[in-house]
Every structure is written in C-alpha cells, then in structure tokens.
Length: 124
Image 1: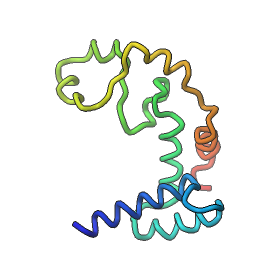
Image 2: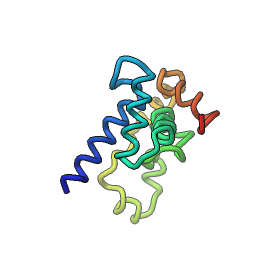
Image 3: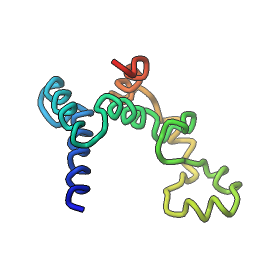
Image 4: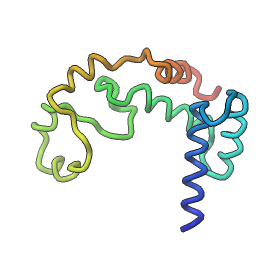
C-alpha cells in the first residue's frame, strides 16, 4: 500500500515536470521527468504528450475523443437512455451554458498551444 502511494506521488512530480513547473528551467524539468519515469513506470514524453492533449481539448465538445472524461451536451444527456444516467451520475455534466463555454474554448492558451505543437511530433 505504501509503495502504491509513493508511486502516485512520484507520478505527480513527473506530471509537474511535464508542465515545466517543478524546477526553474525546462532542461532540469525534462531531466527530472525522465528520471521519475523509471519509478512511476510511465514514459515521460508519452505522458507529457497525452497530458498536454488533455489540457488542449478538455471541455471542447468538438474534440471529445481526446479526453479522459466523457462530456455530454445537455441535449445528449436528456436524450441518453436510462443506462447512461445510471452509469454517469457522479460525473459533472454541462448545463445550459455549455454552448457559451464551447464558444469561449480555444486552442490559443499557452498550454493548448504547446500541446498542438507536441501533437505534430509525438516521438520528439
């Protein structure tokens, strides 16, 4: 149990390195991310690439296939069968302002811009 908690904590540190926010320089963050990947059992660049895609598209209803949490519009939620309501009650679902959030969702944020560049060269 202790090992599981330690591994999760190491992954959180690796996550912060992936955002280049744990240390002052990008190079030290990348070096630490690679070293931590040995212990978290998660390849650093793969984690960084996938996680930045998550940040780029989370909440963007035009790119729902790239996020971990399935997001539904209010219309989709109302039209879904009872099994959907039974399976997803704990997940937050959009309210009437979902269209406004979608209009304001843009790939112009610094994190999203980084993810867009990373998407073109996943192995880089």
